Every structure is written in structure tokens, then in C-alpha cells.
Image (tube, rainbow, N blue to C red; front, side):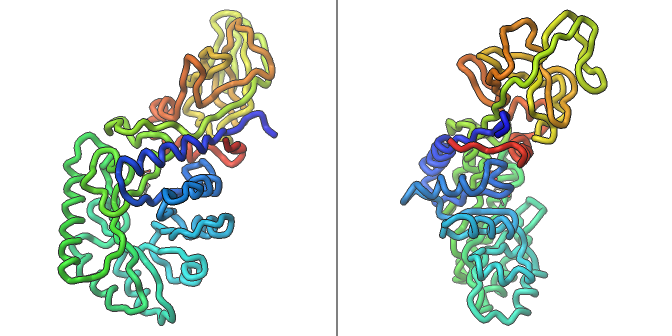
Length: 368
Ligand SMILES: Cc1ncc(COP(=O)(O)O)c(C=O)c1O
């Protein structure tokens, strides 16, 4: 096996999940799209499904294919919601694999009503209260949902909305979205339409908007141990789930004024030693991190130097007693030091979501 691997700490995953459950006291739809944010969808759902009565009530994915993979490779029997819009070409898959499609537009309602459904199809309704991406427009949704409810072969299993800014310090817009959603729910309640399970809260809202919990919460990034932004409260003691480890592959001496890697972006200002590690941008270490990362070896912090290449990065180990084969922490912690996805995300002007999702399939996942 490669000496570079991503260690996925399933105890931390369960710990984060139980913290969320305890804080919100609601049902949980665990968001496992994009291969569980890069952590590996099957081990993630199986680890959470071992929690007996506390296991997640729903799973959420972005694509029908992702839901099919879960059904084919695991034994989980909870409902799986796909956030992608209802597509009539996928109708057989919805039935066969017990997948809930999201109804997001008038066009989909027309398509649904044009199908001669022979058995009941369970769906959820996405309401756009301000995300401006998917969902029935909040001020048109009442009539559209009434139309759906007239179709005897469609069962509304749930209704949800998605926040655009719940992870921002200023909650004005998130509160407006919440108000629009609540108004719609109230109107529908008075028409006695069965709406099923109501949900809205992503990680930002779980942390800071308790009024948005409704029947169920829908965490993604917080399960994997990260806050969604630098602006939320840190009201959960989250633990990262993904750690990236490797071993020193080679060591060479670099003389003063000699350079390291493509483009000569590192020139030694003194005689030094440089170690290479077998991980590069093909593994998900962005080239934008060149000369900006730190690496932990034997509880000491070193600078990564020169350009990140496809398969390798270089580390200035100076004159330290580091040997080929020594363990290296690329993302993770030692006794004294910690490097997490936020450290990289800040350098790259992005968020931890993109860091964990980008760790490529070439990096073996090892589950602990
Ligand atoms: C519809 C929907 N719900 C919930 C989530 C989970 O969000 P987060 O990872 O911020 O908790 C996502 C992810 O973007 C989503 O698309």
C-alpha cells in the first residue's frame, strides 16, 4: 500500500454526530453527498448505522447515482433523499432503490403529472426561500404544492429549504428565509395538506439558528469535524475526522543558492536538507499551497518548500535528524502541533469542504 493515506476516524464521526443530535434534540438527515465529503460514503453510513436507536433517520445525497451506490453497497434501510431535481428518466430508480427525489420546479410538477404512475411515489419538496438555486419559489409554492397534493399517487414525504447565509455572523437574511418558510408552512397547514417531515438546518443553522430545527436537522461539514465558516459560534466541540499521513520518501542535500522543484520558487539561503513526500496535487494537495504549508515530523513543524507537483512535495528539514521512512503528518496533530483543513483553506481562500472533498481517490482511506 502507498505510504500516503487518509486516516478516517470513525469514532470522531460518531462523536460529532451524537453532539449534533444532543444539541438539537431532533431527527437527523446525515448529508453524505460527494462520497461523504471525501471521507468514504459506505464506511460513514455503516459507522452511523451501528448507533441503534440513535442512528440517523435519513440520509441526504446530491445525485441519484450516489443514493444507488448506498443501496447497492450497504444494508441501510433509511430513506435517502436526493437534493437533485426530480427527473422522469430516473423514475424506475426511485422506485427500485427507494430514493426520494426533490420537487424543485413547475416543470417537474408538470412532468410528474404527465406520468401515469401505477404506484405511490414518495417525494420531498424543496422550497427556495432565498438560496436562488433550486426549489419552488416561496411565494408561488402554496398553489404548486396544492396541485401536487391532488395527485393521489404522489406522497409528500417532506418539505425543506436551504439557507444561503446561515454560516455568516449577520443572520438577517437567514432569518428572512426562515420567516418565508414558516409563513408558507402556516398557509399549507391551514389547507390541511400533508407535508411530512419539515427540515431546513445545515451546519451553520444547527450552530446558531435553533428556530430552524423543525422536525429534523441536515448537517454535513460539522459531522466531519469542521465549522462551516469562521463566523459561526463554536458551540459544538467538533473533532476532525480526516487525517492525512505519509512517510519521508527521500532526503537530499541542497546547497546555498540551489533551488527546489519546478519554476525554482524556493532557493536555499543556506545549506540545508530537503525531504520529499509522496503526495501531490493529483492527491488533492492544491498547487496553490506551494511554499505555504507546514508539515509535522516527529513533533516538529517544518516548511514545505517549492512548487507542489503532481505526485510529490518537498519539505525543508534543515539539519534535523529526520530519516527516510519517518512518519509524517500532513493534516492532523502531534503532541505540540496541529494542522487542520482550515489552515489550508485560509491559504487558498476557500473552506474546509473543498479541502476534504478534493482528497482524491488515489489516496487510500484507512478506517479507524
Ligand atoms: C440541501 C443541503 N442540505 C444540507 C447540506 C449540508 O450543509 P453543511 O455541510 O453546511 O452542513 C447541504 C450541503 O451543501 C445541502 O446542499
